Image 1 (cartoon, rainbow, N blue to C red):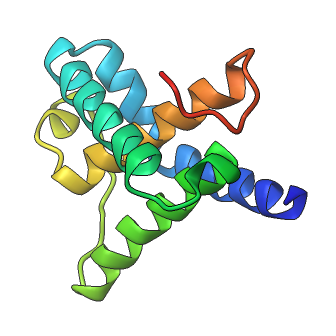
Image 2 (image 1 turned 180 degrees about the vertical axis):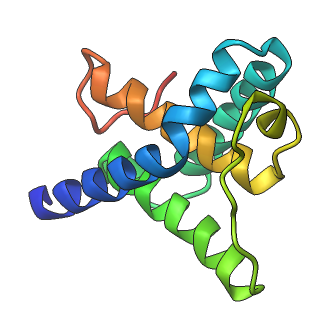
Length: 123
């Protein structure tokens, strides 16, 4: 399981570098975006907690990384590319996919900085 957690952490770190840092800064200065990210966080938590068999046995980071990969695979399967918004205004008009992945980044940050064991997704 440790190997999966390390791999998940690397994948989430890459996603955070590509999208999360700029997006979460934009959300911090735009209450409307922050509210949408919060809604997406709740939805992702519900999906991973209630909708994944044996989710209690898997580490939260592994579930989050798998979910993020699924979203990215969905985007690629349609031949789309997620261009990262360049500024706050761009983030305010970001697609559902951008915001969903931004919510994953936020959840991952919370898991990594939480005092709780990383196997928990509670928010």
